[in-house]
Length: 140
Image 1: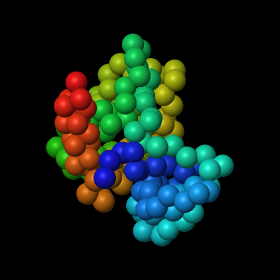
Image 2: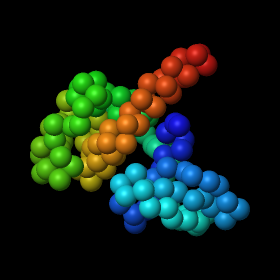
Image 3: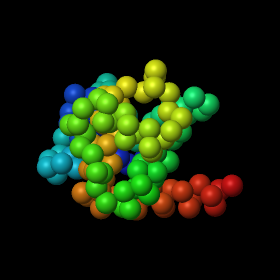
Image 4: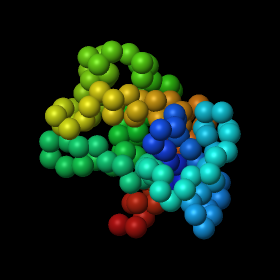
């Protein structure tokens, strides 16, 4: 499994993993309640491996940001909840990614990242962050 198989569906809470691809989209399974739904090609879907976070100098892949959270938290759940206030979320994220672009990364984005990290942790999927780092280094 890799971040290529984990996605976010607009209008649906949490993350989903791709179970099967169909002609008109994909069958995905929720990481929250394990329910399966069909996602059409017209659905607004974001694959986690395609997401990047704006910094003042570049765009950092979400995989790296999640890896930094994992390092900060010693592979445990985050010390902060995605339901905490805007200031607490921004302060936490500043510790993780000090040069993130505060004008382009909103508190709602930080909430999603923290919620996604905790979902990946709950489902024992944090190891995929390291697997992808190793394969990226092998390609270079």
